[in-house]
Amino acid sequence: FDAVSLADLKGKKIRTIGGAHVDWVNHIGAVSVSVPGTEIYSGLQRGSIDCTTGTPLFLTDFFKLSEVVKSVNMTPMGSLDTGGFFFNGDYWAGLTPQERRAIFDSSAEMLAKAYVEWQANIDHAFEVARDAGVEIRDPSEADLATLAAFRDSYLEGLPAAAAEERRVEDPTDLVQSYLAAIDKYAAMIAGEDLSDEAKLAAFLKREIFDRIDVETYGIY
Image 1 (tube, rainbow, N blue to C red):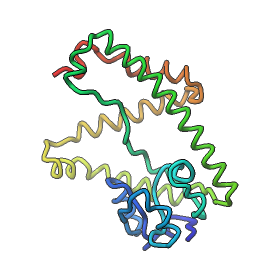
Image 2 (cartoon, rainbow, N blue to C red; image 1 turned 180 degrees about the vertical axis):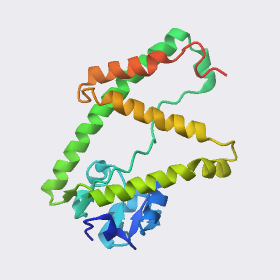
Image 3 (cartoon, rainbow, N blue to C red; image 1 turned 60 degrees about the vertical axis):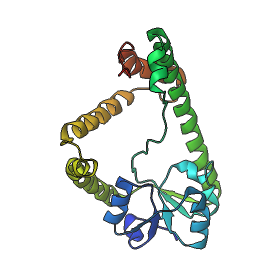
Image 4 (tube, helix red, strand yellow; image 1 turned 180 degrees about the horizontal axis):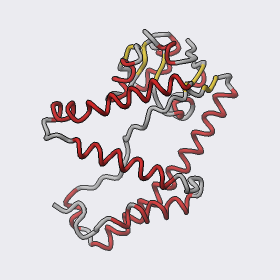
């Protein structure tokens, strides 16, 4: 199966990872299916699924999908936050402010290193895919318009849906502040050299970690 545009996905079975991606797949008339990551390769090979959402590293490092797919559509579907640094509450409270600051400083460096290496791996994944004959397609203006319309509709209904599902008060202000933060940092990093690990670490330290109060953050 080879999709040139989103319209080609109508009625097709797409492996998704939950949340907004499920709603997006339904929005374009496709069928969202739940498949373990370890079964994506065989599913595409056998035809039990037609497509999958995911990081470009699905092509190489994770599942070697460059061996079984014909094309990749580069429609920007956002990210899935599955990582981070997590600490036991009592352990964190037992650290001195100086120790917490050292952890934040190291976090900035580790995140910068991870980002630069991740981007290099993505570039390599596309190179491998192209060498294998996989077509890397940019989305058309029509596809991007479809995505923008879905995004606007999804965000409009998100506060009410979240309040009902999670049984919380109206989270509209929280959603709006999150969206504002995305726009803010997107504009800020537009002028940064994201391939320079040291500069990126300095940016993360200056704009995020240095602003955290180590005396009170995470202390309950």
